[in-house]
Image (cartoon, rainbow, N blue to C red):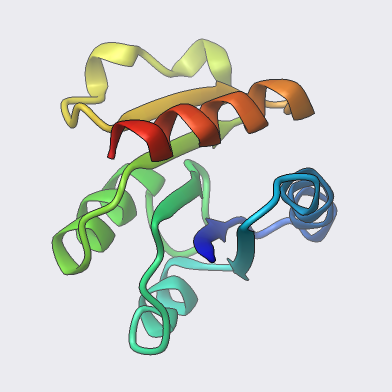
Length: 119
């Protein structure tokens, strides 16, 4: 079973992602509402992919991605509702992918499959 960790502070966004990932076979989604909660989950889980919102209450999503991948290397998909504020040249890690909110289920599924295939 492939484990995906989604870090998102908004419950409706977590529910949407759960519905999207439920359609993918062999994928289990675990969620965290903050950077601290995500770090705590790494003591119990070994995610194969991180999906991280850039605007979290306790940390910047880019900083969290760097910290999580140092603990356990896995590809990263970054998501944000603030597409105009994001510049893809900020993403120096080759496994970072960016998706703008509102999320399209087909785009999420395709990004997950691509990221897992590359890793």
